[in-house]
Amino acid sequence: MIKWPELKDILALAKERGLTPLEIEKEHLAQGEVPLHYQRNYSTISPAEQLKLLDSRVGVCGCGGLGMNVINYLARLGVGHITVWDPDIFSENNLNRQLFSTFDSLGKSKVEVCRTFVQKINPAVSFTAIPAKWEESDADLIYQQQVMVDALDNIPSRLALAQVCEKANIPLVHAAVGGWYGQLTVIMPGDRILQEIYRSSDQQGIEKEQGTLSFTAAILAGMEAVETVKLLLGIESDVRHNLCLVDLLNMSLDMLPKCNTNVN
Amino acid sequence: MVVKVKLFATFRQGRFREKDMELPDGCTVEWVLEHLKIPRRQLGIIYLNGLAASEESVLHQGDTLSIFPMVGGG
Image: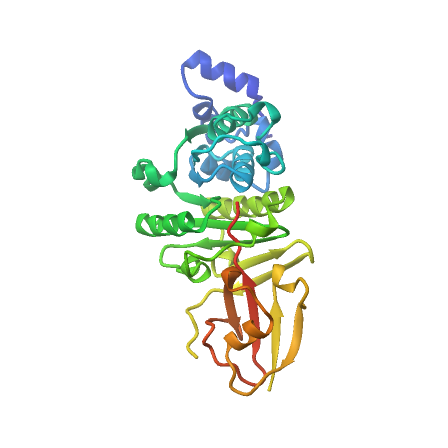
């Protein structure tokens, strides 16, 4: 019969032994004991897979409508090491969709507020908050990740991130949203789909006119978390071979196969 | 010639989702974009018969053309 150690005991044991809660949780899982706060992950996620998630490293570029939801899902699932980049502070027009934004947090660093929430959601997570643009940070940090998540809000930065991930040989989970609509794909090294989608830097996404809605960001972020977990657990996904287009106004989902540009 | 044209996301607004369009023989994707007044700055990926295509791609009887706007927000 499986034992379900409680978080308060995990935290006490970590303090007593001078270890991190993450290390204690890994010890439990290695013995087939699943921390109680992961009980409802079981048995879709086996104890061995839960241990794998705790050992995983995921980087999230952008801590806004997409990013905060992705971080929330990954932290609750038990992804052990999460690094997030974003230089921004909260402003009032973030309140419509950004999960950890509150009236009290206006003017505060997004990644620091995010860190506080993550510690409350899952104190076992090792969370690295970088209050800067990923382009201006230590590139080594990206190379240390197993999966990168594109939760950015502008096209030039998305294209640059895809280039770095290709060079670092790291899969990139991409999503973008605007109004009722969103797109999702997983970019494996060598895949040029983003360069096909964003062909020119003077193009403008529909979000400039349509804005960004809470549920669109949450749904696409949830899909990014799904694909991140599949990558971490070695589960094959059709999204690696397709661009997935989501239309929430008409509740339609289209999968477009990725391929090279057609010749006339 | 008749080409099936499919529009996605905001391009459907005030236009249509899917339509069999009667087009001049040998016309290009660009002709359709002009005809439907698709804003070029918002133009994303174009698919012709399930393959990525360009504005210069020439259309043929029975083709299926799908036009998507660009989405970049987070």
